[in-house]
Amino acid sequence: MKVHVDPQLCQGHTLCAMTASDLFALRDEDGHAYVLFDEVPPEMEDQAREAARSCPEQAIVLS
Ligand code: SF4
Image (cartoon, rainbow, N blue to C red; front, side):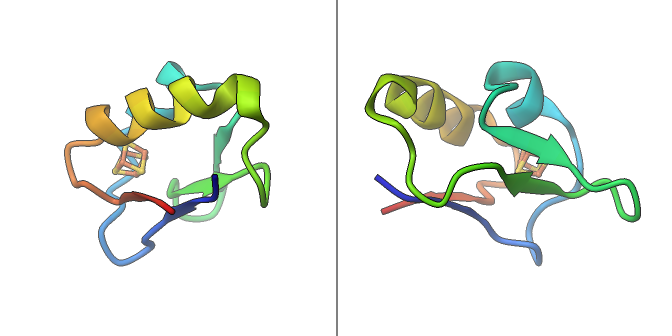
């Protein structure tokens, strides 16, 4: 599984980083989220799905 944050949609609510702190971090310069892994480790896939569900902007894309 791959996970991607759409920078056009992300509003920096931080919910993803609170839901999956090992998977997402926020950039200092604009507060937008980025993903810490190119490929989501299998044991973190549930966290990635939960974060995608919790994002108010639907900025997290799973593929
Ligand atoms: S929850 Fe969504 S909008 Fe908020 S920081 Fe994460 S990706 Fe961006």
